[in-house]
Length: 261
Image 1 (cartoon, rainbow, N blue to C red):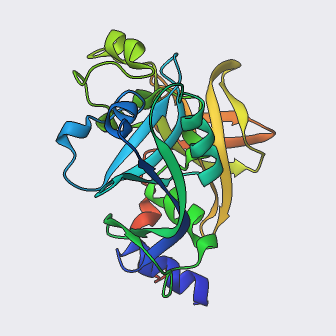
Image 2 (image 1 turned 180 degrees about the vertical axis):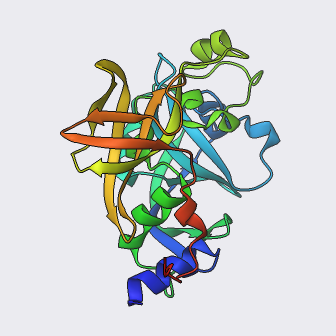
């Protein structure tokens, strides 16, 4: 077994951590009220690290981050780029007395689910392993969820209802308790194609392939499809053909041992 496969098996077993450079400090007299009016989490309930979504007025995800309490305000560790998150926040600063400061810190994401902020990244798992790890675990990247409603990609637990007004809150309130027509699923390639791409079932568009990745187990991917598309269905798109699978992939339990069958 090669080094990368060994490290993948280690990560899938919950050992090790990934490190992502760049953390944003939000501070100033209006830091609380500004952030409360931007993100989906209720800051009054914040007691530790917490994922937070930043929506547009249609309730679609624009940015996401892990939010940490800080003595001067709040730390935001982006799920995408630091520049993208800062740009999203600055767009809504008008008369707010807030300051955004990029810090040379790291978001440390442990394979067992814990998150923390660190000053160094020594000992981290290779960054190039992260897309494969998240794919097998069924964890979407920011690029997979941008433009989608939180409910459609399994992130409704990051929306605190009843917290008051924030960007996208009106749409979230309208859809509270209602089932949305899409869900996040896995794709196993039967014939390789490209992503992102529209997916069809029996000639009808049913969703979108978000990303595809070569893995030790073949070409796998993530997609958002209509809920009536059953697990096991064969869909087409981007020049490929795929079987819809539940997440996480069964290979997420891989221990590094290959079947002899």
